[in-house]
Length: 188
Ligand SMILES: CCCCCCCCCCC/C=C/C(=O)SCCNC(=O)CCNC(=O)[C@H](O)C(C)(C)COP(=O)(O)OP(=O)(O)OC[C@H]1O[C@@H](n2cnc3c(N)ncnc32)[C@H](O)[C@@H]1OP(=O)(O)O
Image: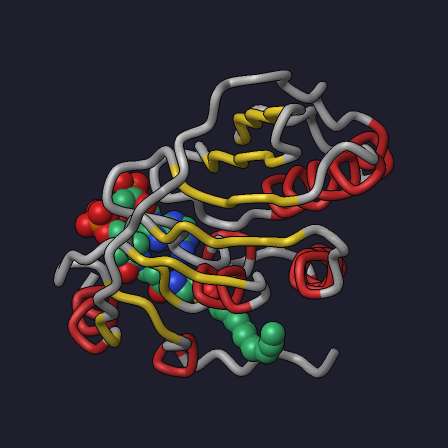
């Protein structure tokens, strides 16, 4: 916890006013089942997707309590959601935001790396890579609406979007701080 407190302190603070486009709650996409099954994961429960077909804009609300930590399962859900939207010709843009209070994403799920097997960690890091490559190379216009803290993997996620808008709140931190945890991201 002391480490986390230090992290919170050292995160760079960004002050841009967040004007999150309100979605019109159009069609809601189906749960991503296929790849989840391939990865032996459950169906999407941690994402609420609002897709307004009249504008072609989808809003992905991350709702993986308590802090949208990017677990293998959650990373898989994110990837499948983006894949599904890309396959929908009427979708042009994607806004990624958080339903959790005060946190956009706490980054990679630390529990995925603690006392897990080498094999599991391999699968986990492949999913991390897949997530950011998918967002970075997406043909959709992607926007991170950062409505809370976004350290390390959360920052990575935001960086891979085309645009970032962050809520103007001095309590919200963002930055690549994972080296403070003694963590060096593996080569891709
Ligand atoms: C495009 C170019 C590409 C270039 C490539 C760049 C390379 C990038 C490499 C990226 C590598 C990334 C590594 C990581 O992400 S490691 C994880 C780093 N994250 C953290 O250290 C965040 C730690 N958490 C916090 O600072 C705070 O929790 C936070 C500010 C997010 C929220 O604070 P708040 O006070 O609201 O909440 P709590 O601290 O009380 O936490 C609530 C519960 O959530 C648990 N928690 C928090 N963070 C995590 C996490 N990351 N994983 C798992 N669990 C987490 C926390 O333990 C609390 O749980 P309990 O209630 O059970 O105690």
